[in-house]
Image 1: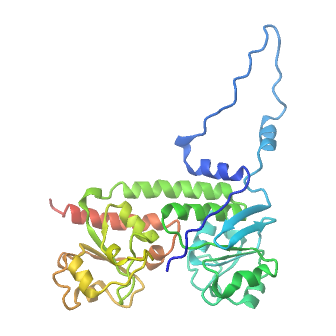
Image 2: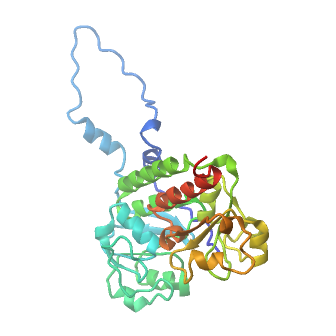
Image 3: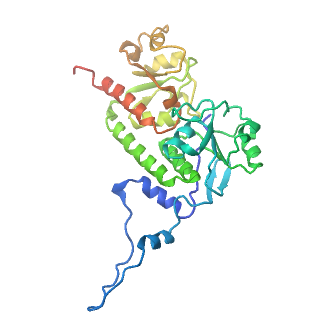
Length: 337
């Protein structure tokens, strides 16, 4: 089941600063400072000795500590800028490097394979080991989920822990990026990364055939688990105007329902997406008994997507959107027409 959507409290003036930065240059805040009275004729005025210093004193810096962050399991106070971060989440590892905190990451879990210079180790996010983690002397640990009450064990040792769960949609993913920026002393860089990702997503989505209502089936494995619109990747398909055939089966809104072959064939998806790490190919899917009349099979519209990008929230998501939008566009307007 998809974890609950995380919420984060960006303390004091930091919240407003991060939010404004992520809105982009076209949405600059309105200056509400009253106009200064004009000086009397014949007098001279002397500007402040250092206006930038005065402004800095009026508002805390975006990298000021301590900071308080609300996580799914409660508030986390980070007293000082962390210099030895452990990431036990491949998604968090990508984000930390994208927001400029890569140099602070001293160890990452076994599946953190991106970026290439990530300090991948044998640490596990699925079976976290307190002694192995403590051996790296971390001053911050980032987890995808609190497995085996690892958070309580580390907190008892005065090691701050942030639970960075999988987002339910794109906007909550941006929230998670901003929170990690605040927690690591990179609020400005995180805001810039969010702004850049928003722009790339908007650009990629602008080419989607919104009115075509193309039926999509995103297959996670050979047992027909899929991603509905209640998952973050499903929310991206919805933003493209696609019809997700898994939605009908997701009565509990888990985000990842299991379908039956009969339901898939009956729904007649026009585009099928399978994972690059699957033990089978597009040709294997096309050869399944009873699938020959499925539109995606008949028209050769089975595409392989990068498993890492499609299963992780992160800055590479626009690459996946570009690929899928291209496939949807080809279906909506076949080549040669």
